[in-house]
Image 1 (tube, rainbow, N blue to C red):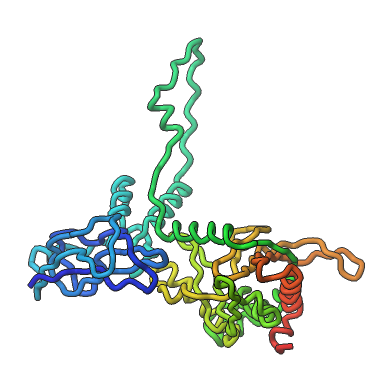
Image 2: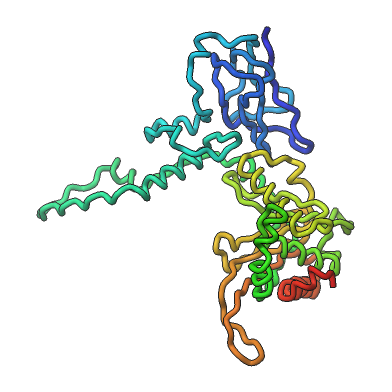
Length: 396
């Protein structure tokens, strides 16, 4: 019996998708539920599972083509049993065409590469990381002896010169293109300003160090810094509702809930999953939510629902060593908080210079809705909550 494999229903607000790669080729046997191909939308990667076990007869759409919901992708000859020839074949790692090409070019054994994709699938970034590791571990090449000096030097050929200045043109992923579009939109359509402050994290670090083992034992999750910042931000948003609001045409929408976006970097680009009703979560709930988002981002299972909405965003450039930056708004939100690296710095306390772990904070905001005074005071609330965490724990 022949089955038609169609593009699955696309999420709301997503009109089309790009077929990134086929994981099976025409003539191959597939088992029911096997992922046949990856479809990339503006927000997430969707998998196309095999509806039945059988042999792929024809691939109607090729890598890189744009598709819409319900479009025919391939045809499948469904069979009850696997053909003997296919049954005798050993199971091979599922490689996308780009990964298969790179592995072949570099003469690599896929079995030696740890896959970080869903179900252990090897991604292109895994191959590149493997190559970097091999390069670092390899002994340095011997330095060639200098050539004897001569009075004349032959000029480099045009091919040799070109090889010294390599270029590679690759299409921008849909996610990267969407991020670029939204960031440009934010700069063009908002009166964006940024205000800064610094916070002494001694109290937070001491509290975390004192309780982190008991916290992890009880909740089976590590106690990080982000939960403190989420809690402190919510306190500030409660006192300054305009920072939790958004502009819709000539109207202001004040949100009576706190859906906090946490910016996450993935191999495909920046995504912002949403902690919904974050004010109802305790520290463990926040840490577990962030941990789950990280896992989903790494294995490609994050959904459109995870990325939709949000009233305020927090981004942490400090994990990459950033000292200071001006984060860009995530429309239609009107504010975003930027965290940065924690560094020991000299500060004055009670007339004396002491060394304290300091983080610079940045709040970018839409001046059409948020006044400078509110932005400065909002950062002041965050500073107060973090320098005296009892405010967060005792709700005072």
